[in-house]
Image (cartoon, rainbow, N blue to C red):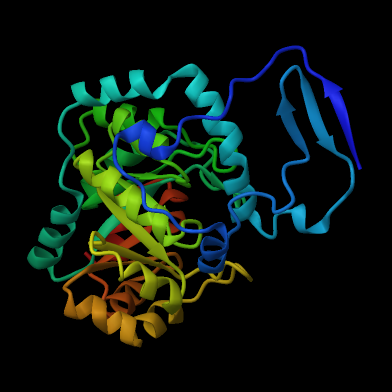
Amino acid sequence: GFAFVCRATTEESESMSASEETGLPKGESSEEEEEEEVFIRRRPPHGRPRNPCGPIDFVVTDYVEENEPRNILEEIVWYKDTEIAARKDAMPLTRLAAGVKKAPPPRDFLAALKNTYKETNQPALIAEVKKASPSKGVIQPNFDPVRIAKAYEAGGATCLSVLTDEKFFQGSFSYLREIRAAGVTCPLLCKEFVVEPYQVFLARFYGADAILLIAAVLPNSDLAYLLKVVKSLGMTALVEVHTEGELERVLSIPEVELVGINNRDLGTFEVTLETTKRIMESKQGQECKDRDLVVVGESGIFTLDDVNFTQECGCRSILVGESLVKENDPETAIKSLFGR
């Protein structure tokens, strides 16, 4: 069943397509092909329960179980449409793009990782600035992004990852700007759940040098297009995978230079470093080595043994969040993690 509900105001029509936003041509693929590629569904399969329709809302009243998000990542991704629409109202892309043109050039995120590994013979650290997560709640109650970022840099972090999702992680895009304005020189990764180019421009506008793209969320047609957008802004993309299958399709995109292996299972949310070992021992992992791609180990890294294990698997970088940010002295925590 359905119902019509009067609305006080009308909403603007849907935003321009990605190609209209950026001026870059977008490849085409069918929705069926895209759904087969990704683990996370982009939207509720039977439509949103409430949809704007001129001066009224069209409301679907029949309950459809498939319309419930299957996990927290799907819930986050589904909410992004609402969030991005509000952001576009506050700052249209034309204004955003104008601001990006005036921004200082991005720092070379990938080169920084490679240089640290070459100089130290240890994985380059991407330390994460994160207040909370859906699974753990508030991780650092005395959260000060600038203080934490400065401590990370002093402790030897090569790059920083900054959570920008507000609803689920209590992050903010403004943290990127605050950290850079405070004099931190490490390249900055925008840790966001990207579903369209507007978010890439937003990240660059606030000072990000790199951005996360999640293969479980983005089919290859979107990944390839977003990689072109990222490159056009002089940024680096960290493309995150969870399985050999995701890595295989990601490797079919020539623009991929930096790959992250998340040790968290998206079905069970269990974390094990064996995921990195298994994937790096696969034919896809061997291809990463043959192509000299930098691979980042993500999640579940808490000790020097974990660091060494990840390095032995073939990772030249690691991304560490919870085990560092929960400490009141992140600088010392980093030195301890690396046995320094």
